[in-house]
Structures are given as C-alpha cells and as structure tokens.
Image (cartoon, rainbow, N blue to C red; front, side, top):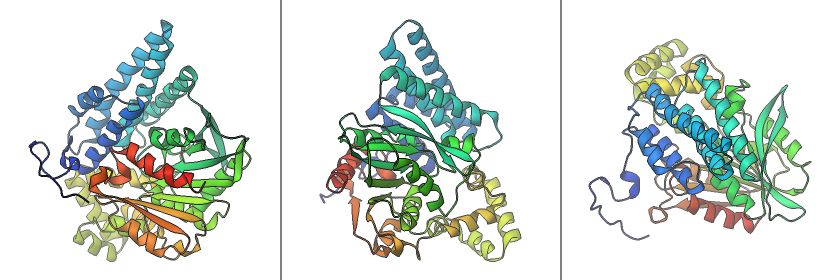
Length: 411
C-alpha cells in the first residue's frame, strides 16, 4: 500500500477522496454518493445530482424527498416528450434517469403512511419498465411467489450466455434498491452469467406496496427464490450464487446456512451480528436504558429522536421495515440477526467483501470470515483501490472487476 499523499485541495480535508462530503451528514452523504455512482451506467448525471444536493438540508428527510422530486418530474416530462416525438433513444435514457430519481426520493424518507411513498415507488417502476421496453436492455419482470404474496424481481438474461449458464441471485440491504445496483447485474450479464435481482421483504416494492417486512430467518425468503430459479430456462441449477449487499451481508450468509442448493455465497460487506453493528453506534446511556427494559428504552429512544432528526428517521424507518411498533421491539429484531451460532453451518464457498473505511459495520466482515468453516476468502479493498467505502460506494467499477474475476473462476 502506498503512503497517502496530503490533499492540496482544501475541499478534501483528509488524505483520500472519501474525506470530501457533499452533505454534512454521514448517512445522507453516503446515500448521495450512491446515486452519483450510477453515472457509470447512465442512471444519473453529475449536474442533475449536484443540483439536487443544493436543496438537501442536513437531518431533514422532508427536504430530501422535496429535493429529488422536481428532478424526477423534469426527467419524466423529457422522457414523455421525446417518446411522443419518436426519439426512442433519448426517451429511454430519460426514462432511466427519471426512474432513478423517483427511487432516490424515497431512500432517506420514512413516513410509511405518506401517500408519496407508494406514488413515487410506482412511478419509478413505470419508468424503469418503459426504459427496458424502449432500450432493449435484457431485463424482464418476474413476480416470485412468497407466502400468499410475491417478491417483485427482474431477471436479466445474459446475451452472451451458453445454452446452460450460471445464475447470480442478489438483493440489497436496508436502504438501496436492486435496480440501482446495476454494477452487479450488468457485470454479470456481460460475462455470460444470468442475474436475478429481487426486492425482498423489507425492501423496495415488496415493502412499500406489498407490506412485507424484514425477517431474521432469511432462508425462508431465499428458498422460494431458489425454487423459481432452478426452473428458469437456460439456468444451470448446479451453478447458482447468492449475493447480499449492506444489510444483505447478514441476510445472504444466513440463507446459505440452510439453503444447500447454492454453489457460492457473497456477503458485501460481511456481517456476523447486525445487533453488534447497530449497538456499537448507540450512546452508552441508551444501552443502559435497554438493560432496564422496554419502558425505559422506549422513553430514552424517544428523547434522542426528538433531539436528532436523523435518529428519528432511523428509528421510525427501521421499525416500519422490520414490522415492529417500538424501538425496544426493533432492538430485539436486531438481536435476532446474529450468525454467531449459524455461520459454521454454511457449506458453500463464501466470499466476504469489506473496505478499510467501512463505517456502518466496522469489523463485522472479518468476524464473519473467522466464524466460517467452509471454503472462504476475504476480499479487502484498501485506500489505494478507491473502493474502501461501504459496498465500494463510488468505485463500483473496481468492485465489479474484482468480484466477477472471483466468480469467473468458480461459477
């Protein structure tokens, strides 16, 4: 690793690019950089995103949705105008970015009963489906049956795949949407691997329209997905990999411990205990209150939520996504997300990804790696890679390079 060179540009106060912030809130800034990264695939544009950032106020989720909405509306209007004029390529490009910005508007916005929640979600996929139709990008919608409901999904078929080809199943985590994680499905199909991107319970439309919350026993989510996957035309049922990103770095290994039809598992970043990750960031006074029981903890959490809009957003948003009513019940859900006694049950070869500047589950990837007894590898991105952030945010081209070279040797 080369020594860090001090920054000459005062806008970068630290030794690496990651020291620059567009929004003076760690979570909001990470989410914003996530959307900047989509420029690689034409899903966002620099000026459009920076124009949005001008209107985002720190600790203000209402400003977040109000900043992204006009940009989504503008791209929607341009898409519709281009389509009416018969300009198919222009229309497809604008539909794609409109789709991104409608989803972006919901990423840091958590009131579940707000009518904009369902409206913006629907609009995002109206534009995404129209983009697929106009562009010819090889994606097709699938509804995967799940406990009396369904999981909205997209199957991306590789145009260069063999007659019988491997399949990568992937899902996101707490906040991001799989359709925005194009570096995964695009990287797969360009290498002859089909890809199935699933909006699982607690995520995307499965949460916002179908009302399905997260659950800790994720094998009960993945098994119905694999049931469908093994029957897809052109898929080699013996070459199926599973990948989870962010909170999915806990979910995917949990499923792999019990779903034995998987050949490979990828956790990006790996998470052994979601509870340990969350509790490490809680104030000591709040942890003391947790030990005193539900009433004390709920009161203490409520007081913190009143003092910090970000804390209030996180608690409300997480309770909704995990299907609980109180902060104490939420913590119990987090406690249940623990692979300490489960990781040893994983038999398939597992890749654990991590970055040296991981800020949301620090140290968890290495702990998961150490707990695994299956064939395993730890892929650590250092500062020289520029991919050292959470889920390689801002460097997904580098992430794809390393991930798919690893997959190519095994899948």
